[in-house]
Image (cartoon, rainbow, N blue to C red; front, side):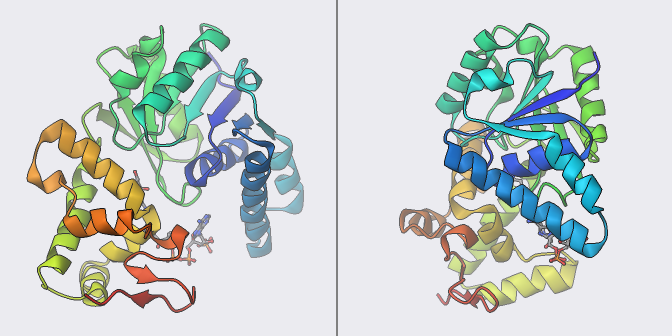
Length: 293
Ligand code: 3HC
């Protein structure tokens, strides 16, 4: 089956990035949000990103117009019914994802392939809400989606091998390097990344070093593009907390348990860069101030 039309559910940070790379790769793309306001906000963000590429000279104005021409917004799930692939990027909560896919299963034709961008939930459990688990994969992208070159393509024990290979190929057509992963908690990246991020918080709690010194250590000592606290704020402390809870629930291992400080910061509404405060205070966005413990 030739994939021509792609649906994306959710036009937040991840969904808008996925919609952008899909339209840039030449696919007709429909993105669905729950309100007209959110559709507009998502499409405006994409427009801004494309305009930046034009400014830098890596995209022509004409190509920008063509990409935007391939991109449509909708508030109804019916608007996705003739898509060949639907990628979900909504809130990281199992009941919401199951409910969404169960509804899409009734709306879409039998050939539509479903994919979830979940970072830590079990694909098998989401797919079980549909009557097409054989046409269901995980497609896990990384933030910022237009920049990060990886997509994890996740198969369950029920995924049809032919569909799986088609989705590996789809990941490559989106301009990403696809890696094959099994449906195990956190797949490949978060299985390794989450314990590292949580350990950084534990090191801070134990007074091993300050926020800035731990960040500088990993950035300058190991060549990571961001130190762990900058990355935690970038990913979102709430997101990291959810992921750690899901992974702890799966493995029952201490390395996946959320440190008390993370829990308290989330309870206090310090969700990282998006809320203006996390391990850094972003009151002055050009000069974030590290938290002092
Ligand atoms: N959207 C689109 N493009 C963006 C962007 C965004 N949000 N942020 C940065 N860019 C582009 C810039 O325009 C620039 O493009 P250019 O090279 O063509 O000029 C390029 O990215 C580099 O940006 P900057 O020079 O402004 O800044 P940096 O060199 O510091 O790079 C970064 C920014 C790419 C975000 C880099 O700091 C980085 O790689 N950080 C680590 C990100 C990471 O680890 N992401 C994965 C998080 S884990 C995850 O998503 C999984 C989830 O399940 C938790």
